[in-house]
Length: 61
Length: 456
Image (cartoon, rainbow over all chains, first blue to last red; front, side, top):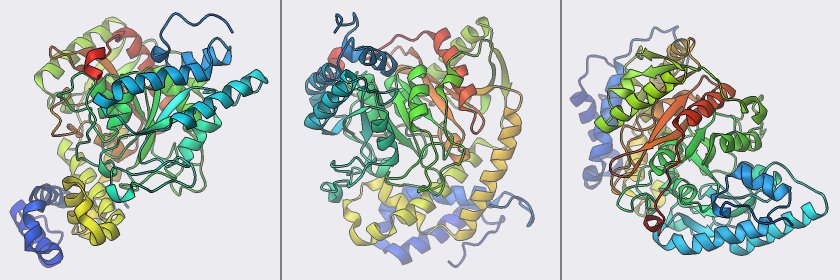
């Protein structure tokens, strides 16, 4: 998914735009309006998680 | 048979009903008939049941009475009626999960939890309404306290049916806040045990690592009784804990002077009336000998919510992938959009959420080490309007961590709606959780109940 990498320097808008592009590709432009709320909340969650600094050896899933 | 008890049959708790049936002071059939009458009277307005199995319940009650007449008792719930949320399989009854294409999906076998209840002698009355796939879209069920408010979700029917005295026990499930929030909004008791304590086999999944099963009842004593029946290892549930059985005797005595950690991050986010009520609860518990200290989370409240959201959404996206691809028009809007967007969450984000989840569990465990339980409002608000199932953010952190939590009714708002407090204990420490809950229940002495006319 181009642009949606784990990068703490990305803004929530960067993440949202990447998710919207992915949604357009997966579900079509006509679905975007129905998905808007979920896309926004998910973008915010992804951004927040990406701000957490975890060293490679720290905290296995 | 002795004279009937002074209390109405529909007001009996599960513990009381079990004792009266066992002592043959009432029959299971009389109890079932009383509840079926009540269901017929209130259900058209309440809409808490999807299926009422009148003949099946009568047959099971007759069998229970006949067994007792022969001196055979099945277990601690012998002859006691119960209901199960409509995502639990119950042999011979449809499991619809609120999804129209499953209207004729008749279960071939009981789910683990329903089988456990039946093995303990309980009598299945029917299946209660769930929001679609136990997600966040509102159900048609009304709140028995006020018909213009939500009963919460996703265990909408279970919460409303127990509050309206249609059954003393109903099984619910919780992935975010779907046992505790309906319990709170309906003024009853909801217990979400430790993740893996009760098997999920035969329950329609939403999110494998977050889905919990548990009871909605009217007293803490009944919560302990039900947990004792339901808990136990199931080799056919891959996440069922090996040491999962629970002895209700461990929770028979209240903890006299509990040490409670008041989670201020939650209190600060609650509505003003909820905060004011919690102040009163804290004052009363302190006067009664509880030691209450304020605790702040080490990580942000929002981080718990983010890890929960990504976990739920990604797993729900996988659970529903095939059906979403085939027939998504039958889905309700919220579960549909969450499952569709869930398929877009990148793998690193899901895995990062699981790493954060583990870190949050470790640091929250340290915070819990000095107290018997956390204390917080069950929800940020009293029951809002029917366009929503309410706010899951105060319950979902404990689903994320898999820790046991319980909601107790603690008062009634100026609007005539229940307030509720939530207690949370460390993983697998339901004994302490329930002992603290017994104490809080006794101190708060909640006697509220929905007005009869509103339920109808």
